[in-house]
Amino acid sequence: MPSPPSGLPEFLDWPTERVAGWVADHPGPLVAGWPFNGTRRWFLGHRGARREDYLSTLVRRQAEFYRMVLDHGVAAILAPSFGELNLRRGEEYARHALGGLLRIGTDEVYQELFRRGVRVRFYGDYRRALAAPEYRPMVEACDEIMAATAEGEGPLLLFGLFADGPYQNIAGLAVESFRKNAEVPDRGTLIEAYYGVPVPDLSFFVGFEQPQLFDVPLVATGWEDLYFTLNPTPEVGQNQLREILYDHLVTRRVPEVEYERLPEEAKARIVDEGRRAGTVGLGRVDPLTGLWRPVLPEVEGFAERSGPRSPGSSASASLESRPDDGP
Image (cartoon, rainbow, N blue to C red):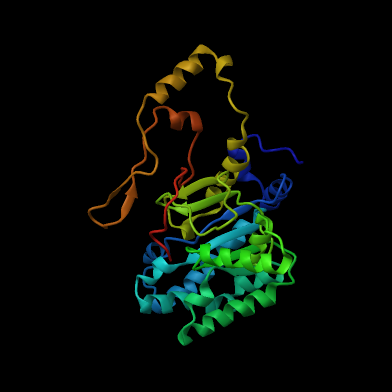
């Protein structure tokens, strides 16, 4: 394996090709769960942009974002995209938002990814949820994209559509597998049946704002690292991505501390920090915007010990809930 970076500052300066090679040389493929969220807030910053340009602008930025992630050596991305909760915003919103599926196959950046061998799969209960005639073009677009990219030999890009209630679907797949093979299917068999391809265990999940892990059935093991950006996903840039990769591959891989061997100064710091109340994941409602905003606990001396932050910000936690602010 190539030599690791001496620290985060060096890692931020590496050429993308070097980062990708170093990431790929780690044991096991890197699998990211990363929904593309906060898009309506992000679009507010496009002064003068027309509402009818929302989908084309969104799909292009989404393609550029996932290209950046894949260029850094990530082997598979699970992108929960639309679920039952989104339908509560009304039929008009659903038809408009799901219309983005019709643009993926024709977007130039996505077409570039397809030529590079990126394989696209759509997972979830979308065929049932989109059974009405007005949604037939969306389902057909999904089928066409999957068929067109099936022979690729590159990374996986998996979009979740109505994957928020997978249990009946998975149970049906298990029964079907048992009837066919006369044996109880193992986890790998169910994963391949559900996603349409073998998918390794989830390595890390990156949400937006509220700490929530969602719509990645069967591949979440409880050992994945969780991150939550304070800025909408379309605003995440290269440095913020690399901060997450560095934390996942380096910072969180440190050996377990042997407390009895620590110097007294270190023990005193641990005891002192353990007596300070603080909860990651709390928030408040901004009186001006009406939006939930995080309240980050202050840890004295943490900034000095951790080093400088990049303009983009991420928080980490280990909470599980449901999505609130989608596309």
